[in-house]
Image 1 (cartoon, helix red, strand yellow):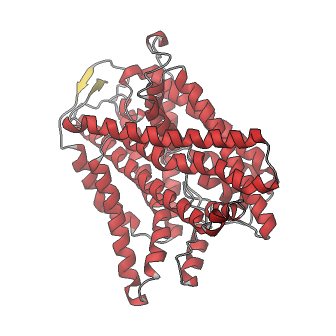
Image 2: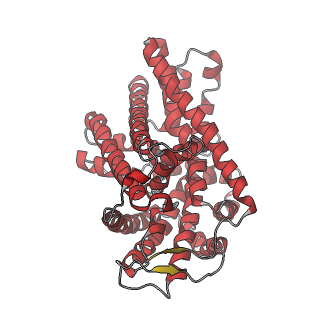
Length: 480
């Protein structure tokens, strides 16, 4: 999966419902500095006078690389060794195109309204105001609220994914500790020592997550962002080095998998590609924004190539034994166990960064309804309730692959595929659009909506089918 997926972290989310101007200004100032991390799965990008082309490219690539990339090999299994990579390529092209649409619409409204910057929510709101429909014009403010809602769902979904990921990897490390060696080339079968249920591991992380989300200083969070980036980069390099070794004959793998599992592929893939919230903040931070479209195309080409390569190699290397996260397939030696520990550290750091975005949307609105005396207690109470909610949802759905697919299908498809094409139609329809462009936008939105419905249904159906049997066994068998 990807340490972080996309985030509208750098976007100044301003809800109409927020009355006190102080809260809105505080939120905007905080969010304007928040784009330094990747996601889902990604916050980060410190506020500067302007970033260079290379810096923008690095931030764009980093914003797409998170926990999602580790789950793409299982996604390819759900689509087939031929259909999977081809579908990833098509999805990457569509995701990149939708990002270009969002940038173009934002630029149009910035020029029309003489504004220096416009976030995703404001762009959708002004797009509805420019639509030919009087009803949409009168309800344009709901466009911003819809984007904020899906952003909250996406970010909290990332947090749920992280908790399941933490539990899975720590459980495997603990169970294998007695048999872990320095020999990474042995084919000896290792039976792991049974320990407690994975859901108890999730609950064991809760106190640490509570302490992390109580950190409200963004400068302190950027330290965690740096630590997460370093640990993830090292881990990804080691994983890539391993999966390129001893690849078996690929002829045993199906070219096209069953159509029943393809919706699960869709959810996981769009979960990985959903970084559209990073795009507008990056453009705003560039010294010369005219180069951004080229940077966007280059960055997404790099990301798509990496996704296809790692996903395909992982499936070729492990075949039908591929797990929800490729890190769970690594051998039982200290080198690869350290990869899991590094990812655990990185995910813990990233949880606080992903949590920041929904917290800064919900909390300012809530505290604006109470007196100053109750502002801090309410702030802390909401943070505690939100982190407990993500842990509870993870406990209820402790299947990493299903959580990823569910989050991707429900919210990522809306932000990345459904809304941008509709935004282009509402923005430019009054100025004249070719029927081919309208058809293209309608086709992309329909594709996103079908993926949303079918992917969500399939993930929930798989969850219900597995409800009668233990979702996670207490021991795992793999080759050392």
